[in-house]
Amino acid sequence: MPLLFPEEDASDVRRRYKPDVINGDMDSIRKEVLDFYRSLGTKIIDKSHDQDTTDLHKCITYIWDFAPDANKSSLCILVAGALGGRYDHEMGNLNVLYCFSSLRIVLLSDDSLIYLLPRTHHHEIHIQTSVEGPHCGLIPIGVPSRSSTTTGLQWNLNNTEMRFGGLISSSNIVVGEKVTVQSDTDLLWTISIKKL
Image (tube, rainbow, N blue to C red):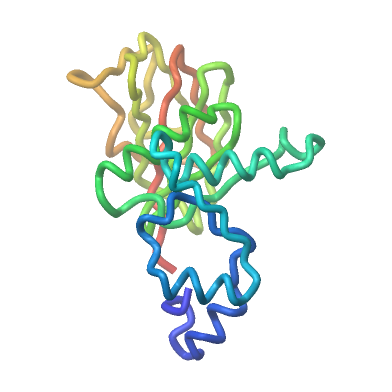
């Protein structure tokens, strides 16, 4: 966070943007950082006994359990810094999208965002052209798509088969402010974001 506000004192920024909860297996947090936030009253949930799920999985579970039932259907979770690090961590974060496919989870990096388009829906994606695009992709992970159809792309799919080892819709271009997607399998939607 302090890097986002270089003209301000780093300690002031850290205090102002204090997390309510730090949740995970604590294997990658420095002791002085943990102690700093603990001293500010941040709740620490040590899940070091659970090595079968990622830290992101643990956090999404916490958010789901903490959210009131009335709000769960409209819950949208934005995960900053989920991409651009170690590849195995990125794949673990993509896996979380599939583990929680009924939730809207958006993975955000410096240059793109990714979210899951479940096969159970016809998707209308409204593009905010001032901050998104034009580059985008639709990626089937795990199982091939026998039939995917889109509108609003430079290279639309028309009942097109996509699979690893064959065609995937990468380096496509958004041509309008709305993209529609229908597929017989879950797809990852990825779109570039513009530097501000």
